Length: 558
Image 1 (cartoon, rainbow, N blue to C red):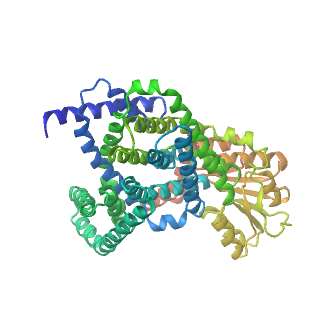
Image 2 (tube, helix red, strand yellow):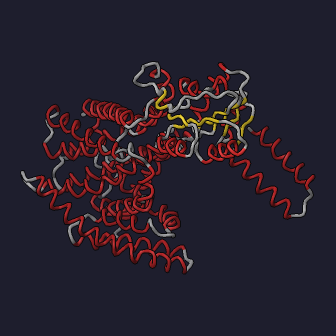
Image 3 (cartoon, rainbow, N blue to C red):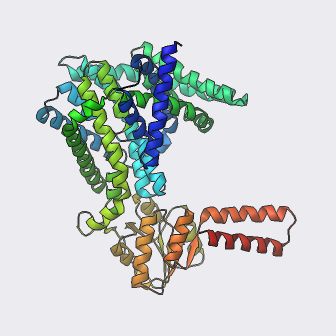
């Protein structure tokens, strides 16, 4: 490797490090800081971008390989229609409307508008996961739908990377060229997929049995680059080949270990990829075109908010879930940069159009986390409007119980509580905002209401005013607070037992004067400690004293 490449690599990664660090300090996604570092660094760093871009393409291959590893047909089956069919519809709407805006109002070329609008339709999986994780909402209903929707969008990149280059060189016969490319790629990838499914389990098992982390990483990268190289011979993108390699390995027993081992390497090269994208945007260009960039950013965010909310409503999700989904998916994702780079390589997008596309994406990535933090306040202001209200979605048969138990959230914890109540012949009613969960519960003879537990109409439909106890087993802390506050107001004598995930959640629930707070992770730790003490020969009294001390320390800490 030449000295200039080494120097350029050092400068680019150093800029990315500083940019990511500064972004983290101001609580922005590091990805935004990395891209901004590239934009700023493009003016004064002596970097030969051609050499660095070649290295960043390796990062793109490893990035798509890891996406394939995280993807499985089992996951797709769990995300539901709003995240599958709904996302396809939303992407088509955004692409068509954005195309019309770019082409007819802004005068961008037909092919350029197609590339840019296709990129606008994609959202950022990395940012969505980060926002949900920071808010402690990964396990909530809107969290699952958001992650599922992003997964579908990541998969949609595969046909887009095939179709867009095909139509760019097809003259006027776009449909024929696209269909021909998809058929060729479909046959090639099907053959590779079948062969990979047959041999991948044996290859990964053989490498894993050697019990060497170095060989596991090396073997995984060899498989990814090998399949990428094979499909590229037939004119298929190497990045798609890497995605396919990850998809094949995702079905093996060693997939989680392989993902864990290759992730640091992937992250390094993907950062390189994103920072080089920043080098394509010149700061002076941003200043000169700030008007159109802000206009496009506002247009894209508003379009995604509206279409995301409407898609949620059409597929049966209203209220806070629909608002959270629409806000969460309102940014332009990292794979848009992939499409823009392809468009630049094919000379379909001009340097100006690429810069506008990247700058617009960066603005949405900056704004999206801010909106997501404010989603509860936004929801509370909008909930008075009937269209935005969650309300009672489907009550089922009328609830006429008294002295019964209301269970909000019928997941694993709620299910076990319900089963125990049933064994004790204690009547109970379930509220859940998952059609599948409610349908299965009703099939098993459980009184279940499909609706948002945070809505007073839903709670009243469950007979909350006549209930003797309330079990709040939802992982959604916002919904928890709304449920508890309302019930304490209308039924002060109601016994409330709530689940908490994090220590700060425990503190908040104690402040709400909940009668009993259960933290599953903490209770699981206590069970393990009991067994350790018992195995160490401690007496029952000594064990009880130790557990009591731990509980006291925990309560003081929270």
